[in-house]
Length: 422
Image 1 (spheres, helix red, strand yellow):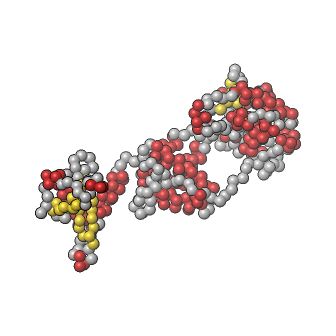
Image 2 (spheres, rainbow, N blue to C red):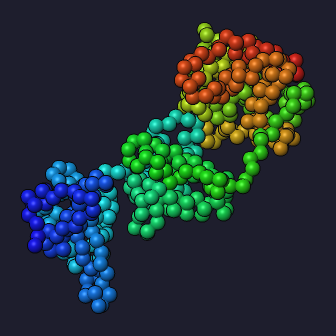
């Protein structure tokens, strides 16, 4: 005999688990007192829907806990739900236990989760680092075509099973491995950018926490070993500056001057090449590089030393009517010299594999300590390196600008002693 709603409510938990029929193969299950005594509804049927002799197996379909309110079921609601599940199973020929999972997936598809392309755009809008355009290229030229630009970003959660039957992690790893076989460094870079996109999606609530499918492991790192940028030791600078001044490479005045400013400021070429006259503050004796041209996204201050100002005044006589300090009519892509022009000039000077523009940055960090006796932290601040752990960075707002100015004066004077001409 099936139970009524009052009878279901009146059942008391006992020492043993109870299962009582509510009719039509629907049961109320009462857990023992030791397990809390909770009540829930359970449907029992056979799938495939044949007789036991023809191979149908007994399957149990959990409806949900008994009660009123969100996520709970009254007896009437449980009966209606059980009838709906059995009808769906008969009509579709599918296991009745899969209905809720399929409905959950369909709900996710109809959810407001943005597409992967929208998540990528939102991430790029949130950052101001110099490599932003590089990241955009990785995403739009490679990742989005491979992964699916219109696929909801929530579908890439680590454990989510998509239409292909693969989890989000498996889909992302297939993409990573397809690149790794031909370009391991690019594969590492792509995975890193995707990891940041998914981290941003998790922060926005578009993906579950701890479900980033692009997490790196020892196995996802290529065996490529990066090599340091070619640089010069301090005692070889006199020869280099002599070669620079002789200019047998036939470099333009603008490029040769940019090389000298590179040595005096050790800025990254992406920050140096687009230098504008408006960024020079002679009242404060500072060159102020805006954050969008800095790798860390923060505004950067370079004290103007006398040698640096003298060189810049020479450039003003040449390009003072232009927007850019290193304006160049030769450049077809930019209104200023190309960031690649400095490395090209080093090659033409005969320094291929011996010196690169980025390698110049290691010279002040080394010689600044060994030759000039300045502390490494001070030099790193002037190089726009991040100094200290997260806690220190959160509370230490000092710029040490006066100390940095002393270092820059000593540095430029030392370059003059090594043969740099301004």
